[in-house]
Image (cartoon, rainbow, N blue to C red; front, side):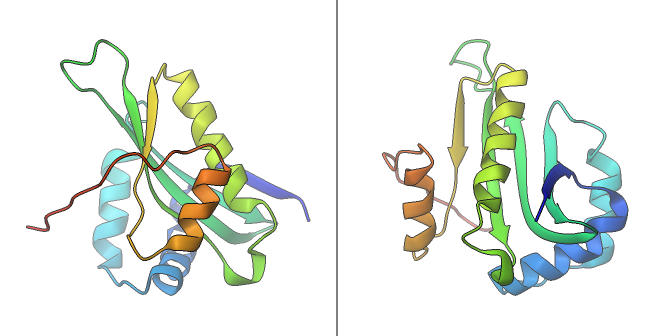
Length: 145
């Protein structure tokens, strides 16, 4: 199995949507997803959407965004969101490869830090992130509006 990590192409959005819907059990408006992708995907200094592929099959996904905090100097930071792997491909290093690619992108963009958000109940994912060098030293808060 030769897994390729690459930037998401428009024609792969349907497959990524199916994967994320299955893994996270959440549904969104696919037409709006495609519209947003067309609007922001060319801004690779701010947004990166990564897929893991086994041949033509999408087997993993994550998204990365880079931004600045005005008072923390001139280095941006990266936020990683929605790390997922197809059930049939778990425990084969795919999510690790996605994180490594995200870290490479962060380094290329002079990011000083990577923030990774994960739901409270995903203890297996938390152990995975810690194994990959992330530290759980902060509390994350969200307010949906």
